[in-house]
Length: 423
Image (tube, rainbow, N blue to C red; front, side):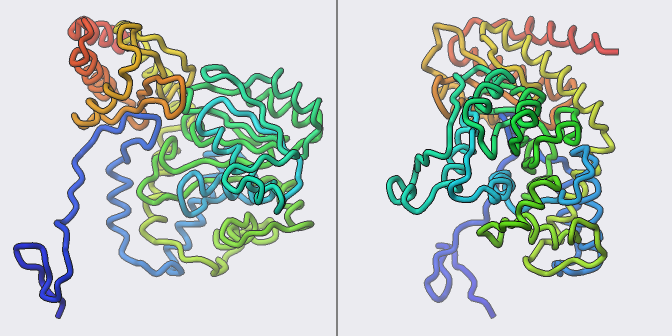
């Protein structure tokens, strides 16, 4: 029989036991993660089997794989999900990059900057790592920095690829660090022109924007996350898709990985030799609970409809943008899942104070993680009039607490007028 803690939180054997963890309900209104749909959580809790090779668990993985292909808009056989966060998918996407490979990366925010670091770690040789273990600077990786608040354009990509003639090019599609959409078509066209294999970080666009990755054939690899457009927490399965060109390259020269090996990981999703097969190969333990919740998240996305969901995000982002601007803020982003903005001049420098105050009220917004300091408010899984009204009302309250002269009633009245304009 296990020892029971006494009123001081100590077991009979002297082990300290903490109280059961209680995490309060919070409105996640940042760049991600978004609040998980109750149906996804219900499927997670209702899964009755922890055996990862049980027939329904394997069936769920197969069906999730098929639904992911629809979500991505692809016929790529190697389309599945990596255990972990979005960074796990991105690490898998970068695994085919070997030391000495020539790469051009495009950075215009915090997360494309981390992508760049990951690439430099992958492409470094032993001497590069020894010279700067935490932040190597291999000469075979060229980083193109685009100022915060600006998008990576096709012209920027074309000029860099024409000059450096790399093997690989890496870009974020939507950069949530600065709230900017980068030129996917221009990136694809430049990669095609210069015979470069493109890798796209679509962490912030998959499941939010309406696009088919097969329309961009020069992009060989796409990596996303579970907590934004897919809204599949708590599973932490990160979607990824490889086309045949990069899979053939791995077959030819391999890659120094096991956990994040694009081909070996695919085997557990019933993908072998570029074909769907009936039997999953055992090489890592997937959770039946995670499979069930991920499966439901994909069902919800496809039931909503990719085009409809993209239109809903665009509509509600516009309403949020108008409301924030009416409070004297200047929006600099062009994404549809969040707004990134500067506070009125008189409150410059108080961004973290405002964010901290909001979080204390259960309203989880974010400041930017790099300079310049800005505010980020997101609408992931908040695609209703009531949800947007709640977000705007809470932010108006926060601005008033900060000392701004905001007419909350007028802001909400104008928002309701805009929302009612939708037929």
